[in-house]
Length: 282
Image (cartoon, rainbow, N blue to C red; front, side, top):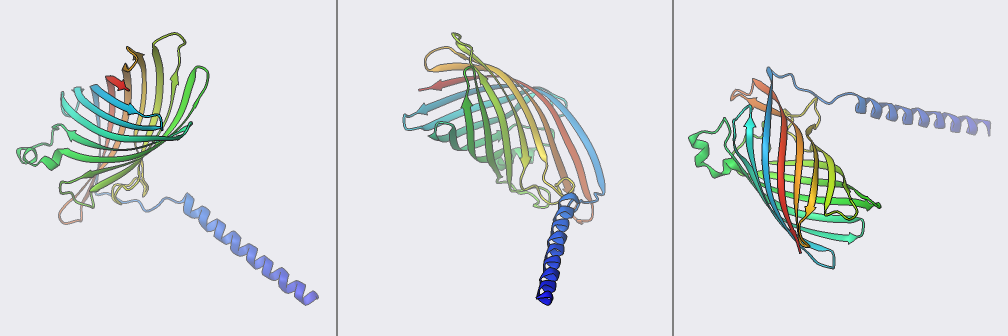
């Protein structure tokens, strides 16, 4: 019996040591950064812009919880330290939504994104329509809860944006994936036709190319905050006036033909936007 107990005790100790070694190895892997590249050239650019936005949103709702949405949005830079004032982007979006239960909404949609000119455009680029078209598909889950005078919600959106022009896969993706997390609140003012609201959002890359990653990891590429007021002008329509601040961060990679010289440019954006949206729900 003593020999058996001794053998069992040694086995238990070995097992505990093995488990401890595994846990230590996992902890080390989590703490240590992944492989980070030593770039041959590093630079940083900062741009600032003031933007005007206009939107029109049409939503058809059914009693079974289904929704069909059509949205058109135009963005114009009134001031841009890098590219000057110009038409910047437009989004044409078609979406379908469903509310399976009271506190949860699901949405799936497609957006055609049209880019305006920037300082890098040339006659060759303008001749290729693929240079300024992007195709976006998204899936959204929104959880919300209503209080007496406010509604809180958390929105998680997985977004895929595809381009059809030619790119170097070491520098850019043909298809980019992002995760956008938004926390917001709508406030009810009893007896009034307006509703103040605010929200904050963080966007994180999901598949940035190896050379583009930050310290070997994906990175936060956008931080947004918006405050506004929705004004009900009739039973079916409303206007939304808002201000949005955006901090954008990107890592532009340029690899020479010899593949022996890698240039990194960290691009930062500080953007202030004022917008108005017309909403029709029926």
